[in-house]
Figure (cartoon, rainbow, N blue to C red):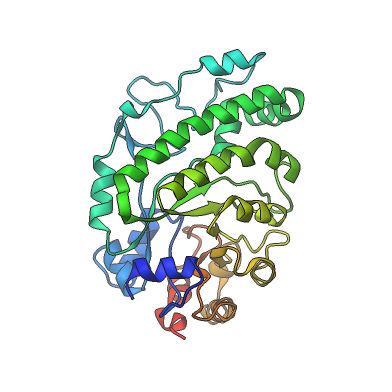
Length: 340
């Protein structure tokens, strides 16, 4: 069973020969260090040695810079809308017409060369093709966080218009990405952190009123291309997981188990068979502190919730960072743990 089949089977709750693994959200510098630690010359060789199945590509290139929420239009100095902007364009709106006048980037500003190269060089892996489509974060960045949250209550029509315009952009972008990727993409990701450590940033009802209808457009776009869909949201999000399932999410990430109500066993008990899980091994305490024996015991427990019947991709509950010793990363990813 190759990486693509293994990951697809896991997402769809079909039999796997071993539980797949990924390193979502982990910076390439950490991956390069991990590669050196295990005696590999490249990150790709490290993936093969540690039996990591999911490769996360970047997206299209915007005037020389990958189109993610850290992007910046450096040639003109204009801050792009997904960046934390000291002068948010929607900070002081009084009408929907002002929202409609704002000029978003168009696809003529993007280049597909780097994405195609990344896909071609990593086709042996299951590809999560790069698109963050961070509607919630874009909304807060474009308005300023306090303004954005106030709009939801004081000017809901303006809030709706902003979120719709942001989604208009991401739908076109996602269409372009999936046209470029073709049949190479196994799944795409949607990164919207609706949870804090204790609860949600906004109420479930406000999520359903303002964000769910627009997120649904992205889900539908991916499924129209025949691609599986991963919903990423950190934090305590248990009350809105049923929404993600109803909308058609195939995969939930990252399962931040240190957040309230997000213990892996509890979440799996509630939603097993309705959505698959990617993550779930604590990066806040367990992986930084160890020891390796405790990490492997925790991994064994997580794997025991699924066996080889699918439903799980092993990874950290966040991207791996420099506070996690490489020894602990290797302990989590040990291929021998995932074969029975």
